[in-house]
Length: 246
Image 1 (tube, rainbow, N blue to C red):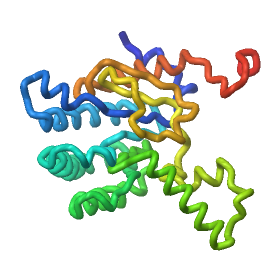
Image 2 (spheres, rainbow, N blue to C red; image 1 turned 120 degrees about the vertical axis):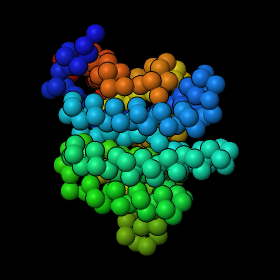
Image 3 (tube, one colour; image 1 turned 120 degrees about the horizontal axis):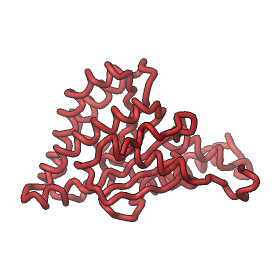
C-alpha cells in the first residue's frame, strides 16, 4: 500500500519523536550479538531521516542513548559509542546533501571525549542547513532534564532575578533542552513495547502515541509514512469538544 500518496502534506506533524527500540532482540533472533542489531539500526535511521525529509517534516528527534543505557555491559556501551562516531563521519556528507541540520540533547558531557568532539563537529558543519532538524537524544533523561529546569528557575529566584509567582509553563519550557523546537505532535515507539521510557515527558503531554511491533532494524520510511497517516486520522482536541475543533 502506498501510504505516502495518501498523506495530506497540509496536515503533517511538525515534530516527530521516535523511541528506536528492538535492536538487541532483532540481533538475538538472528543468533547474533546485540551490537549487530545496533549496526543494522543505523540503516533504519538513514531511511527514516530520508523519509521525513521527503515528507517535509520539520523536526525529527531520535532517542539514541538514554542515561540508563550507561548501565549496560561495558562492551556494548563502547561499541555503541564507536558506532556513533563512525556513523556521524559516514553520514555527514549525506546530511549536507539533504540539507539536514544535526542537533543533540542530553547530558552530552558524559559522552567519551572523541565522540563528543565528532558530534560537535557535525553539528557545527550542518548548522547553516535549512531543512529537517535531526535531533539525537544522547545520554538523555527526561526526569533529569525536568529537575535541571526546576533547579535553574530556583537559582534565578534565589538571585532575585525572578519571582516564584511568575513561574509558568512557558518559562519552565524555556529551561528544557528542547526550548528551541516545538513539542512533538507524534511519538512513535517500535518493538511492541508500550512505555515512554523517560523520554520527553514534559514535551509529549499532547502528542499522539503510535506503537508498532516492528523491531527498529526493520523499520523503514514506509513505516513512518504509515504512522503519519494514522496520525492524520486522529482528532486533536486539546481538552475541547469535537464540535469546537471541527
